Every structure is written in C-alpha cells, then in structure tokens.
Length: 167
Image (cartoon, rainbow, N blue to C red; front, side, top):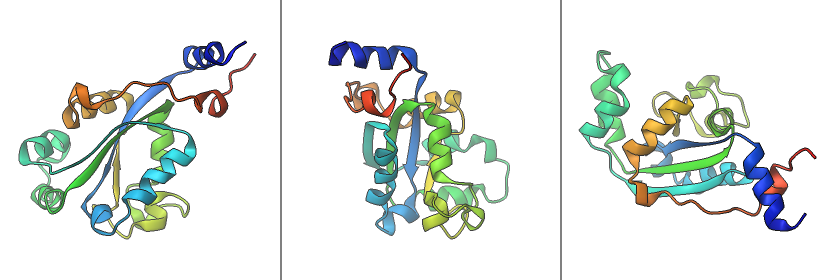
C-alpha cells in the first residue's frame, strides 16, 4: 500500500473530531501560549485554526450563556475581556476528550500534575485554558470563534504514524 492509500485508510477508519481551545487572559499574559500549543502538537493533534483575538460581550454572553444567572457572570466577562485570548481549533481522533484530558480539571488547584492546569494554573476561572466539553459544543464554538475561511483542511502525513490503523 502506498503512502496516500495508507493515509486515506487512516482517515477513513477512525472517528476524527474538531474541538476549540482558548488560551485565556492569564495564559496569554504569563507567556504560556507556546507551552500550551506544544502539548497538543506533541500529542499528535492537528492545528486547523489559530488566532489572537479580543472577545466582546456578544461572544461572551453566548459562550457563557449557561452562567448568565450566576452572581459571578460579570466578573467572568471582565476577566475574559482583560486581555486578548488565543483561539485554536484542533483535530484528531476523539479530539474533544483527548484535549480535555490534556487540560485537566477546571479547578487548577485540583488538577493532576502533568496536565496544563495542573502544571500552570493556580485558580478558577484564571485556569489558563478553555476546551470544548462535548462534540456538539465544539461545533457551536468553532462557529462562534471562527469564520469558515479561518479553518484549514489539509492532510497531515504524521497521521499515518500517530493513528496506525489495524490491518
């Protein structure tokens, strides 16, 4: 089997997903963007979208709609607007769960060492990173943070080695 056939087999036999990562203001201000990005590259995920951006009330009210009635909602919005964030879309097999495992639990003080939050975070909501919590939310978040032209579809030849298919 030639290289292109093997790559097609890998892509055709596994459940690839896309998911959103935000490096939050504390991660940006502390200079952790590269360290965060490296964790996902080292895992074998494929970066398909990346940008530095400011988030506004419209985006935040949509993104955190499940927290609108909480007394700390305004505080979260103020924090998320205090600095640009880095928005990324990553692709891979079971990407949503894989990314959440790499990120660690939401409360950084309880996060396992070796995870992004366990290694770099000291609090909540200043916990370095946001990651989509389900495939459905990932799809909504991709549309929320990216225009279609900002997402790139390309072959990553490394897939053949990261996700070697069963014969």
